[in-house]
Image 1 (cartoon, chains in turn green, brown):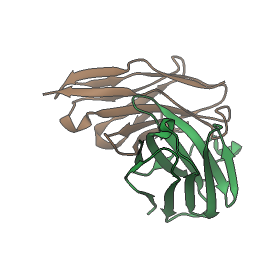
Image 2: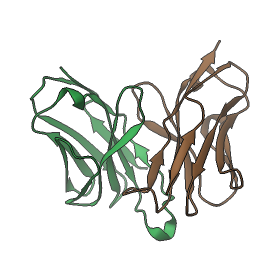
Image 3: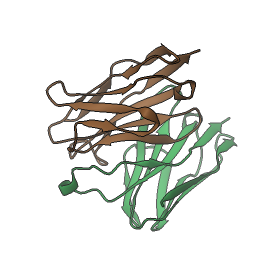
Length: 118
Length: 115
C-alpha cells in the first residue's frame, strides 16, 4: 500500500532563517506531488505541484521554493523565512491525472508540518 | 470555471443525531467530487469520492454523499453523529477547469458534536 511521510511535525524558526521540509512517498511510482499551506482558520492554498522529477509549477509567488530531486521526494525550502510564512504545511500525492480520466484521482495527504516563525 | 461552496462554516449537532454538511459546486465539465476530513493538527483524510458512477456514494466511518446534478450539490450525511466525528470537513471539486492541479477546495465546515 502507498504511504506518505512528512517531517518534521512541528518547527519553530526565527525570522530570516532557512527552511527545509521534506516529503516522501512509498508504494507508488511517478506520483503527482503537491505542497499546500493552510493558514489558521482558512482553507488550503496550493503552493507548488510537480508531475515529474525536476518539473515544478509554482502557484503563488513568494519566498518559498520547491524541488523534486527524486521521483518520490518533494522538498519545500526557503532561504529566509518571514513571519507570514507561519502556517500548517501539507504535502500530498495523487496518481497521474489526465484529461481522459477527468481528474478523478484523489489526493492523499501527509500529517503536515506546523511551522511557527518567531 | 470551477467553484465549490460549503454553505455552513460551522455545524453543531448532538451525539447520536444526524449530520448534514452542505456543498454546492459549479463545473463546466463532468466533475469528480470529494469529501475530506481533517482532525486538529492532522492531514486531510479522504472520506469518499464521486467519479461519475453511482450517484449515492458511501465512504468511511458511516458517511455518505449524494451527487445531484440538477441541484449541483454533493451534501455529506451521516445517520448518527459520534464524538469522534468532530473535525473540519472539506468538499473538493476536480475537473479540467480547476487551475494547474484541477482542484478547488471549499473553505471547510467545522463540525461540533455536543455530548
